Image 1 (tube, rainbow, N blue to C red):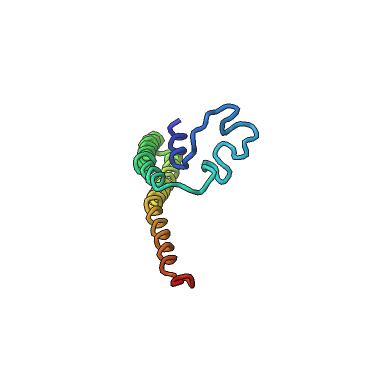
Image 2: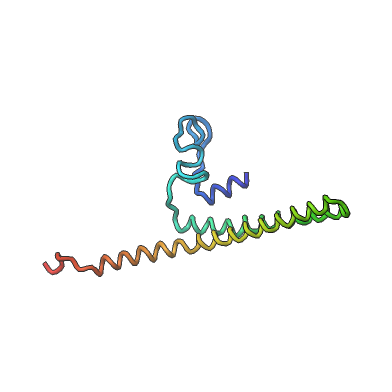
Length: 146
């Protein structure tokens, strides 16, 4: 249930009642999460507050929980390796652990990048809006001076 809640915060999926009128109702063209992408809300817009909330969810839930899960897996795999010391299984477990560690490192980098992008996106959109607005104000119209 917690995973669904995180997904809902990250994807801004409105909570709808289940049943005949809910998101999984037969004939609902949007499907359970929206028409564009799995887990999406059905539109491409999000507010700066939603971007901030998603970035905070990455920082306070996803990153620490991913790190904790990786450490737990490393501990258990290390114990299993010791139990199979001298067997080929120990070498296989080491290879699996090394691959897992690389995948976790990649995931943590991706989460950090997404968090940074979410936090920077609002500023970029605001700057673009302000810049375009300034261009409109700076353009002289033939109607000026009439």
